[in-house]
Length: 334
Image (cartoon, rainbow, N blue to C red; front, side):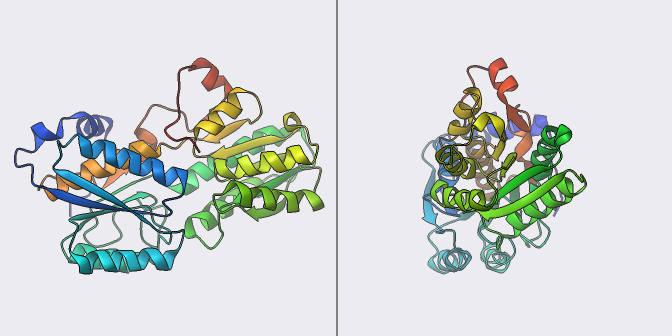
């Protein structure tokens, strides 16, 4: 397969060109979206983008969402069932286990289904955006270590004049390969500075309540944290509650999350949080849907669509940028 990277011009053509004009045949395409969890706001936003893009095809594209329940086993079984059932022509997935799901997706492509992955690549190399599964149509994602490094570097900047600078990390689940990569990146970047101490790492499972409990446990042992690094905005939502309940002044703690949801935007604008890592789930979903339909109809599409290039938003969003862009609205609520 010819490997291509989407340029800005190609991306514009793919996302803005009328699908009806580009595809005279308008063959029906049935698309299944396998969410990591359909209850998760980020996954819901991906699906909203999928649905919006599907409407642009004038009714010839139908979609359905499946709940992966943040379970690798559940999602693997869903792929097997979709292949056996024959109801769908294509799959878009937000993978729970980026390594384990590969064999199931290879069975899907072998059965003739078009497959796109969002948020992360599928395969053993999380930094390799090109297809690692035979027959995979496209990956709509950015190397997760790049964003993790950017988050950690903001902590380094904040801690420059603090010794020691005590950092609490709240990750999703360390069992996930992508969260493990993020955590290892945090440790590598922060570990290069002798004044910075990662005093604790908790799991938030992309849920504010779980993150709140993790932060409460951390504060029991380390009430003097200087910074909180959350891999997701949902983790900061929970951490904020724990910090406030403990009587800690948020203005004295540097807080950075990930995902760029509207709750984060509002909190940063209000001066409660400091920053978040940019992500655009609805744009990811729309790009994946458009690519998968075009591929199903015989058109050549990029094997990698870089999420970071889908919109003109800085990698790290802070108050300065938001103040300069007062009309900005996030792609998902949180």
